[in-house]
Image 1 (cartoon, rainbow, N blue to C red):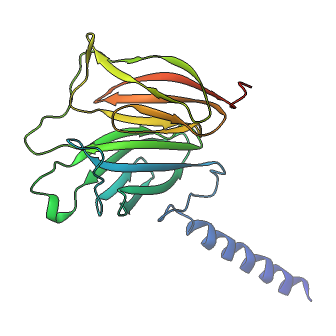
Image 2 (image 1 turned 45 degrees about the horizontal axis):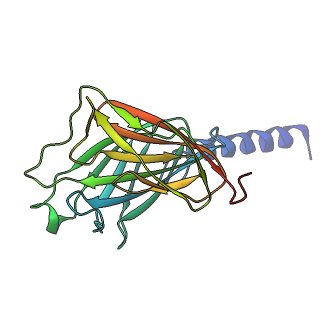
Image 3 (image 1 turned 180 degrees about the horizontal axis):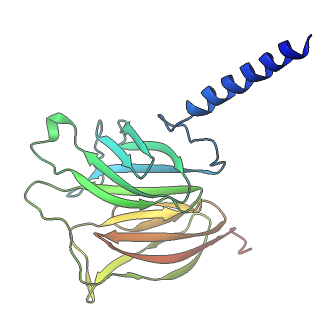
Length: 214
């Protein structure tokens, strides 16, 4: 191969590489190159009045600086999305068309600050105002649990329970939580439970140990 031919081949390879790199924007569940540690957002959308009732076919949209993702909840009201770790995300949940005459759209903030974040989003009826709080505290603010054990957390403002139900989330692969703040330990490790009301948030540190206490 002549020197000129080799130069043309190298230039062609560089051009192909540039095109491929330009096509690696965030689309669907893909995370852009340069972010090797994505976070996984798992969530469930429920009826605020009766959290045992999941909302299927709700549209979940996640927005941030360079993130635009969407998913539809399954028959259990669940969704899964993969996002760049470290992002503060705006999550918008729209009820399915047949239920739009019953439920409000939800708009919440979720921080993708761990490898996995589990969030519970209650949809409010049209006649109920979103929760508001001048201050926010979570009780208890630190717990150690064995695998399989449960702990109910409370969201308080000025000493009273926040109503209607706020948004609960678990950060770290240590367990799951429901719309009433009931946490179930499912994996040994350290994480946190977070409650959010508007722009306010409060965290509880959670340590999960094995059934032998180690």
